[in-house]
Amino acid sequence: MNNQTDKCYKCRFFCRYYTRGVKQFNRTKFGWCYKRSEVKDAGDCCEIYIYEPLKRGSKKLVKVCLNDLLTEISEVRKVIEAERDERKEN
Image (cartoon, helix red, strand yellow):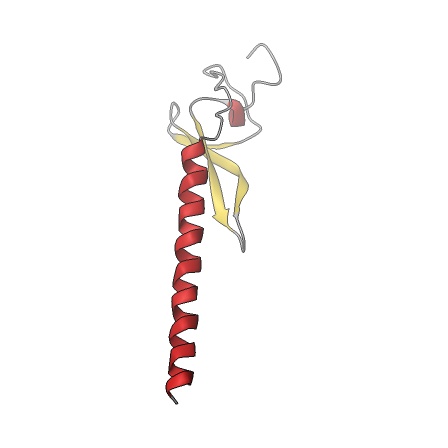
């Protein structure tokens, strides 16, 4: 605990809690410490702190999200086409 920037939210053993919002998940001020096996405040610091470098997002996640969006758009298109075909028949 040499530096005041050694906060739990930057620690390798800290896993933050999230709550579900309307459009996204919201971070809480608390999380689980795997080393101490207890709930900790994100601003706390302790002697077992080990820095965890930031993770870069992968391109695979972007591909999966785009694929999901394209699937949803295709399903909407099928519904619209089915409704249009029903109207033509009547």
